[in-house]
Length: 199
Image 1: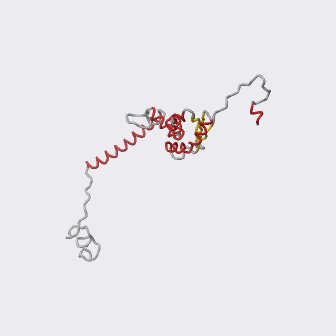
Image 2: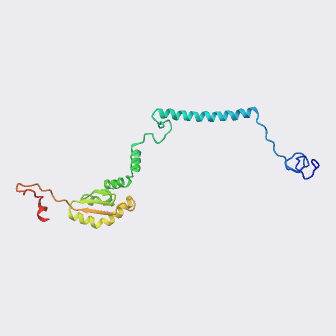
Image 3: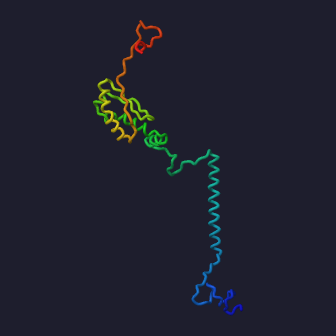
């Protein structure tokens, strides 16, 4: 029977459903207050501001595209601002992957401090082959070339300590170059010089 407190789902005060008013011990469902005129105005204003902000950003992008695209540098620092010369060179070296050749070039500039004044006066680094990791050194006499060949393993370890492990694998030592001979008046046509005779 409806309304008499039976097990029916009539929803009356005696139906036993939670949250209905009038039953002791059961929690009441909170009532959601209806939005007043002020609250509705706040929500509408917030939505209008977001739409205006989106329209403004889109209009700014269109204007910048007409002016040549890209963002312009403003009052805040960003990646397009001028850099000090040292920072610009370091950035260029990093971007191009020139760290190892630049480090080896620095070693060539500090050669006297690395090998000592005596050796540096007679042996000069010529070039660095990055693929083979070979440093070529020219000596002014065969005695200094022999001395450098004996010191090469310790020098490779010292260079790798400065530059990073594996940067220099081998030091190629060149002896003194032979003096260039001028051609004399009795030169045979088609001859390439003394090497022509000895192979």
